[in-house]
Length: 211
Length: 251
Image 1 (cartoon, rainbow over the protein chains, first blue to last red):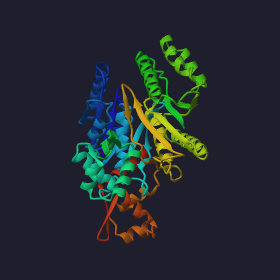
Image 2: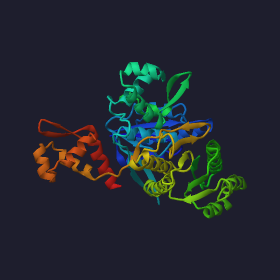
Image 3: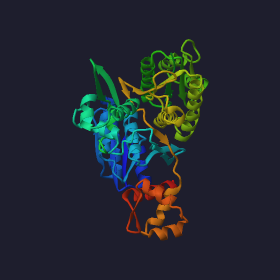
Image 4: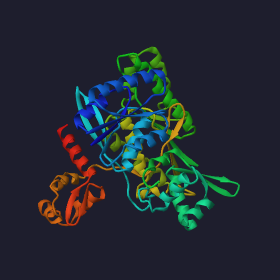
């Protein structure tokens, strides 16, 4: 088991989580927005390292940036990962929780009550269902659209170009596009008569899979 | 015309040390940043660990600066024209928060859409506890993506369901509006222990009574086991889940 934990000021939520779950490996995700926070987080990180021994450190330059958080945690979410989202900023915790949910990995949080520590399981998942885009299905039009938009066009492309690249019917592409817009993964703009699609930060939740 | 709701969480920190003042100042700043971003809305709901009276009692023992910061927010309670209501819910417990908020959204969305009105939710998740914020987010996503209401998202004409989720702190960071859901463990993961000794499919069925294959289908779907030849093997995911379940049981 690999325990991937977000860390803020409190070392105990990471230490206690690790002591209970006894993983083979600990990954600690941390970040700070100013020098005061930096001091406190670094103290917490040292406490974690002292208590748990060797840990993999993942430093988030901007813990308020959903994109950076998602991209950096994604690298550590293998099949044996468990996500502990108790510490750190909300954005760090959310990006870890949602990415883990997309990958169908377990998510936990640590609660301390009356000097006792409990691990609680967070039952979050991504729904199945044909109405929604299937981002984990690499053949789905939504996944292919996002992949081409990010990898070929760097995040911004026209519907005309995408239609050509994906070799899909306009109605199919339009349906996939609408699902992605509704999910706030892409934004649609009109430039003259052209429809332009732009990737939003939240789309990077799907990087590393089909995208 | 759209009936728009502003939603936020709010807590007040009660740590004994000086860092508390900074945390409470930041909490209030995040609330106001989220409030200003929401702009025009018909009604607001603020989910908090404390009722308005409880919050006032807590504030009476804090510094004058903290009292003033929160008084400006509490003043919004039931004041026209914004009409913000403070709702008490245990934001430190995911299950309690989620159950409460799920019912809340079903009632609100259902009640309005039935009258063929457009309805919008502007949700600020930057305040309050993480698990409470996650519960609020997941419950809204679940209700919005239900069979009953998903058809209204992105709909041209009435009624339309519009959702905006963001984190407000030194700028607005938007979140995906996706089909996440809350799904308690089915208990079928417990059957993973029968696969530790690599049984054949027949042996597994005999030991577990899974004649219809429902358990195996579930375990395969979530990537916990693979069938090779006629033998069942645990995957890395499966081994991790067994270990996690053991640890959760002990604690």
